Amino acid sequence: MKSKLAGGMSVVSVPWKDTTEEKRMIEKEIGRLVSQGLSADRILILSPNRREKNCLGEAGRLKEWPLVDFTSGERGVKFATIRSFKGLEADVVFLIDVRDNTPVCSPADIYVGASRARYLLYVFHQEG
Image (tube, rainbow, N blue to C red; front, side, top):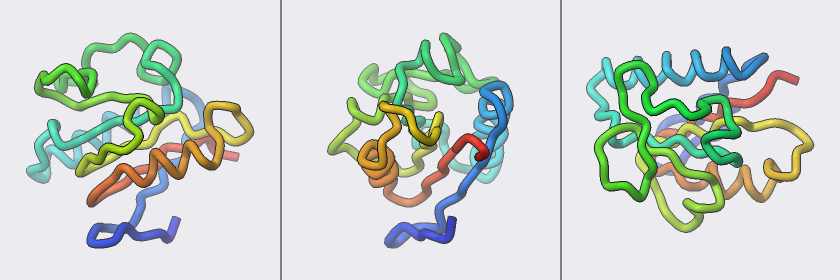
């Protein structure tokens, strides 16, 4: 992708073949950002699906970082569905589980999810 967020960095497009690879790539990118000094608390993972129905499953952690609901007030990488986070913003957004031609992944849903990022947006999408 060649898009750029206003005042931010270029959008990072991350293709994946299967959900195992997608989860591994999410963990790798979180690790890279944290190693560069970004607090994991500033990262939000957005999915069109609830946690139990996406590549993260019921995981309570992504490697050493807690994965917490964005409403919990707990420290860690935040998680929300696209629709539950509508109207809110986060510094860094990982938009995951993006697939073509699925009812929960409409162009409007992708727009809403992508527009939640203040500074940095990653889009993890199925190769196709």
